[in-house]
Image 1 (cartoon, rainbow, N blue to C red):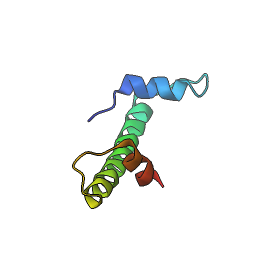
Image 2 (image 1 turned 60 degrees about the horizontal axis):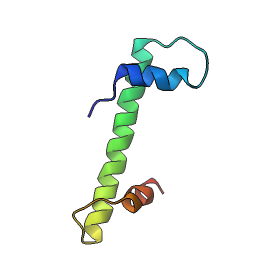
Image 3 (image 1 turned 30 degrees about the vertical axis):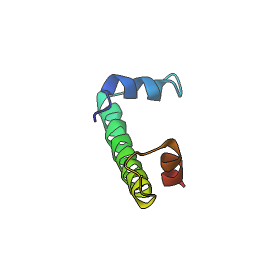
Image 4 (image 1 turned 120 degrees about the vertical axis):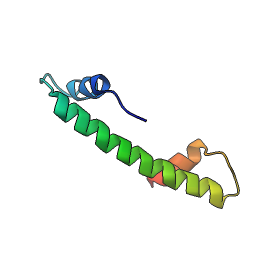
Length: 65
């Protein structure tokens, strides 16, 4: 999965009226992808521990706790 640079720029700009470099937007995307991957991995483990093959919303919420 790859988050677009344009979307990352939009996210940063929504927090204030500043210019955003491509490099900063790309770095944010990389960090968010790593964070999302960690959450997904933990959520998958929670679902597996509960004997399920499907990751549910509550698994994601539990992975964030």
